[in-house]
Length: 114
Image (cartoon, rainbow, N blue to C red):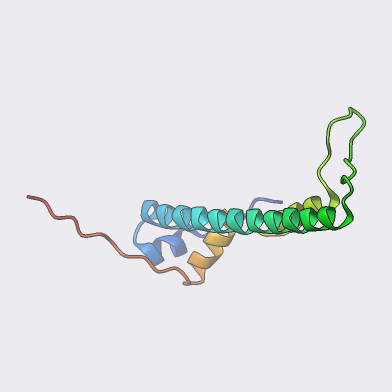
């Protein structure tokens, strides 16, 4: 993946200053990453539940897959799920794109002193 230059003036126009824009995009990237992690774990749990049901139905032990060093290898389905998530744009890229397209909303907390 190559380096993508960003127009800092456009970024500043939206939020007011560069630091503020970076904080907004970073928080959104974190949200995107957390959402993806939840979805990934949910899909893995569904896969494990399905495998457990199949194993109970056949009453056989699932064959373990090993690599050359005799360490357990991940099942093919798990690797396919991981590959799907690897193909998604990086959370920072997605957050920057959402920011530049005006899809993000933010507000400021009012702090009370005294």
